[in-house]
Image (cartoon, rainbow, N blue to C red; front, side, top):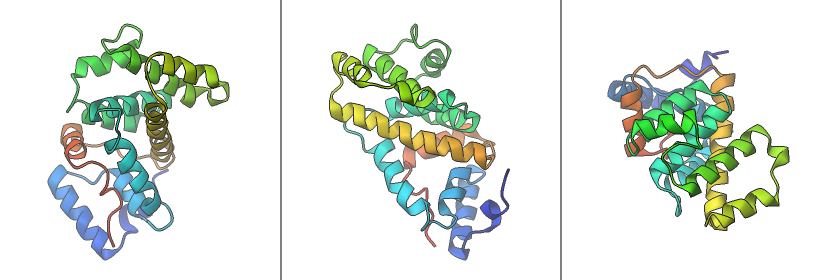
Length: 196
């Protein structure tokens, strides 16, 4: 259910910023609208976690983080975030690799560490009550240390929250995914909560 406050419930300064973003990329992505509406309640707290988890990792490239986001969104059944983040990931990875991961992770042309973490994140999304120490040990056996695993779990948390918001608020699919993907790839996520 798309709430009208997400398109007209922003402050004057936010409305100006929304017009600027819309002029640059054709529309303002729905996550920005949600994060900016009554931002003191949610957006101002979520946005730093978003930026830190998706753009300030020590163990994962931006392409790998975005691939995680695509895979998590697909696991959660979120068409909006899957499509948007395929567009972002294509700025760092070949689209055929992304599609191969979504089709069959076992035959996808990615390294074993990435396969292991994606399978773990899928389990964390689909059946979190079944995650155990064995899963963490399997990741460590593939060469992932505690920090790399924690970073991947943060990515999973970020996307799982946004996937639910996208589905609950019926986010409007981007009209120009390529432009949105390039914008998010270059600018990151720190501006997701507009000032004002």
